[in-house]
Image 1: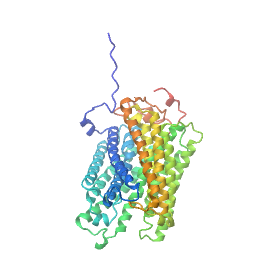
Image 2 (image 1 turned 60 degrees about the vertical axis):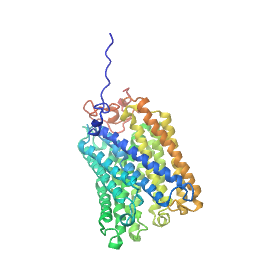
Image 3 (image 1 turned 135 degrees about the vertical axis):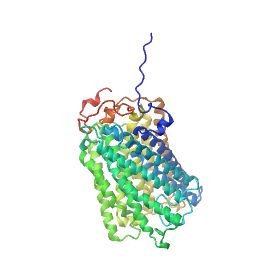
Image 4 (image 1 turned 120 degrees about the vertical axis):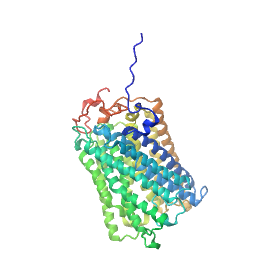
Length: 540
């Protein structure tokens, strides 16, 4: 007589596996995966636009696209990547999935609000996609007035409405995380025992709540001026276009930290795990996230050195911009100190993380060039700014995002990916990125303006190298995508804690986690990143 086979334990993926059960779920883990699907879709659109205009930029003449088409392509790339990928990527996917698991909670504080934030995000994306499909937008991702509010012959109202709507998703997510972190920590999970990923999410949530309403209202004013003829930014009606820049950058520079602060949290988690050490200067790294969030609201004027701003105001903004580099430098130095004499394992997440440190360091140091008024006047609106921005956002944020995705993938889906191909993809992306954007520093310093697709032939070698690098990086991203997706079908079971990492999500939750996260009550009795605790090395 055959013995009955034991049924696999139910988890959040297998509990109620119908379409409606997913679309109406209030499980933070499922919502995180829904964000992942949505962001992957938007990323593919933004990346396709970049591939098209990079093909055009390989030569100095307009061989492929007309002027207006080129403007719409780079605008689509910027809007999609900034507002629908970079800003919500880590909070939407990793934050939603991990914040309750990392603090020992069963869910976020407001589960229904969490689901609503995903629907709002998708609704805003739908408006923006409609704007693209109905002819596109040609204003650049900054929507600068009075061109966007008066003169542009494109779908500014639809696109602005899409970004406006999506802003509420960020606000609601930030509110949810703050309340969850304050009120739902497990017994023993004190503030000084919180993982640094949680500190980063907390600081990001503060910026989201304080800053996002500003950009939302600003874009709403653009819609009002364009549709109803209000004289808010149009100088012909008594408006002030420089006022728009103040309002836009008051949000959009802190938005840089909305994008990068969660990445800092990912880096701290991965570095600690794969160097088998507690993060050096844990308290300083934690509080530096709050310092970045606070100081980030006082540096917006460095975007406006050439916009009728007085030199005295510019001097203050320049000093404050140097000041915000201090808490960022604290993180870099402490991460390097963590690596010192660590037992380093060069897994795929670690390769992405080391790549992040190198690339973000270049982006941060070149930011100091742009914070210097005399240099900024020369470099403003050149490819130097493009390179700097991408070294911070793509070299920084996207590398950290990929590090986190590879690190927590076994926890999210319970499957291990092919480590060899994951490493190959990471190395190709790193070198492809440098081939893409480093030449732009040189072209920008020589004076090549950004947003032009017809340019002097002396810049063509740099643009050709950038185009080759972009396609090389695209190959790495395809390898990464195929490696992760194929693991769903062919990957080996991950086990509870494949990385032998600290943290409640690794030691107290299954892979993939239970529907309610933990099968037994959670109590925290060790410090964060205690790799001397023998329990994490037990077979699980």
